[in-house]
Length: 190
Image (cartoon, rainbow, N blue to C red; front, side, top):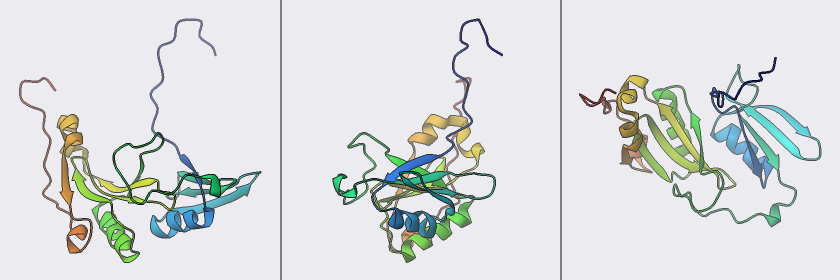
């Protein structure tokens, strides 16, 4: 059915469905996304471009796909370290969520055991996070979300909050449970 009237504006999306990354070495990236981040490999195809598809679990057809670039030698060099600041156009980072605090702590141990360098470790007002790089230098934020009642009272303040934590050693593996709660200020109507 079509409408002859004016547009009502865009429909609200339900979220980002999946991300496709062009990679230099599909084998190295495959190992990173499966063995380091824990995604399940679901299908490999080659229709002129070799691609591999990954999901976080049942109920998702795929969350991430990798596409092998035709000439890896023509690609810009991989950055020597992850930088949260924007230095070039393109993807700044991909956030990979784990279901709960225990899974997040398990991931921190796994990253440390596999000597994956942590560029930044800290607590946002709505997530607890660690930032790493994939083999192509794409930023990856490993996180778990805090309950909505912690941050929804004042989302802007929660988003601006950041508690810097150690990037290595025993301190990197600690995670506070006494988190700040961001409540709406009285009299703002929020």
